[in-house]
Image: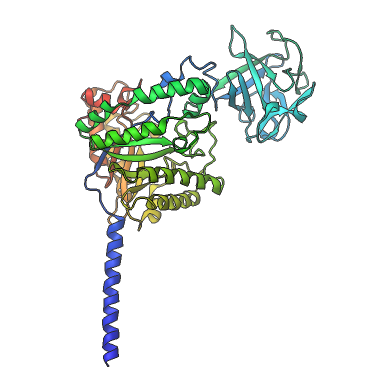
Amino acid sequence: MEANRNSTAFSWLLLLLLSHLCLWMKVQSTEMPSVQFKAVNLGGWLVTEGWITPSLFDDRIYNNDLLDGTQVQFMSTASGKYLTAEDGGGSKIAANRNDASGWETFKLWRVADDQFQFRVFNKQFIGLDGGGGPSSSIVAVATVPAESETFQIIRNRDDRNRVHIKALSNGMFLQARSEGTVTADFSGEPDWGDSSNAVFVMKVFGGIQGEFQVTNGLGPVQAAQVMQEHWDTFIVEDDFDFIAKNGLNSVRIPVGWWTAMNPTPAPFVAGSLDVLDRAFSWAEKYDLKVILDLHAPPYSQNGQDHSGSRDGTIEFGSTQETIDKTVEVIEFFSARYASSQSLAAVELINEPSAPAVTLDVITRYYEAGYAAVRRHSPTAYVIMSRRQGAPPAELLTLANGRSRTVIDVHYYSIYSPIFQSMTVQQHINYIYQSRASQLSKITQDNGPLSFVGEWVAEWKVPGATKEEYQQFANAQLEVYGKASFGWAYWTLKTEKYEHWSLKWMIENGYINL
């Protein structure tokens, strides 16, 4: 009898402990910040974006329209036919297409000011068959480019889109022959007449302006000087003072993987880690919190300028190594800044793209990245960015039950076709209805916190007045103010686009926080 009573008492005690444990886990997974984060992004500073700072891509870069990732097409003036990679790659290069599309478009890898490698549709590189003899045919079979895949583009002085293409491995020029074959066997100096088989019209489009492009374009010596000057002047201590005095309590700092590397991998240049350290010291001085955001992982997650990509190819998640290398970067930053009183959160990656980055890949990465942060900090929030093109609610199961997790969504009213013809009132209604509904789906009781990590008071409404901009901004502030973690405006400064600059918007009375 006594044994039964003891057993019953033990069972009740166990149930009580389990219920308290469940309650504790629930509280841990939804622990709210003491204040809602009202942040501004420091975009274009430690991760270059050419549209934010176009001055970095000025004439200091020779052939600044031929940076890494720029897409080119070549038409033979003699035949009027475009060069093409047969089957998209893995075969020969021919000059037999009347029109240009994917197989006729090549991505540049810049080797020097006027020397390039050409990546074809299936990711092989154009080169000389057999490594380059005196009359080599042109193929696209190499997956790793070498000298036989490297060419010089010589531009006509009067028409820079009129070019000769010289193979460095044999010193001869490419020519498109009458039967459509392409060879590297034109010796001597070709003329610029239309009938010359060695003359091509080059069409240039689809360039990328990111950190890789500016540093590789400038070269190591000039890049070190230019980037250090940019880091020292684009964002300064006074900006942190301004942020603290104008109703904001935190900054979201985009960083690139190269900042965590020692030595810094070429073509990136050293120095950004010291600048990041300085940013943390300024944040501490002005009582601001830092959301550290891995904007550019070792392998591009979305192919965009801000992802550190060389040519727009998305490689994150293609192998386990790409995930492991990215976790190493998170580990480095977490260890370095865990003791800083300003570190509020680590965002594991910015805007991974669906379907190129699958849910399985991002799940495996977020699990490993979360563990890396927790090895160094039990208190820093861990932010998981939604995949572009995927529903943000897909992350709820992954984030739920883990302590201090946040789901990041980005809300812009400018890129999708649905916004192109909206009136002022339609834009505002969209914020109050659609955006509010979307946000509510991930802002749940006892679930991960929600964060609008990027938004801006810009749209494509021609002739909008200052008052209308104010109404648009206020609508977003009201709706995004319901995000349980907070929001971050994109961005603090730009050289050209005023409404994208929160500093300009505040100083000119468009936004009052």
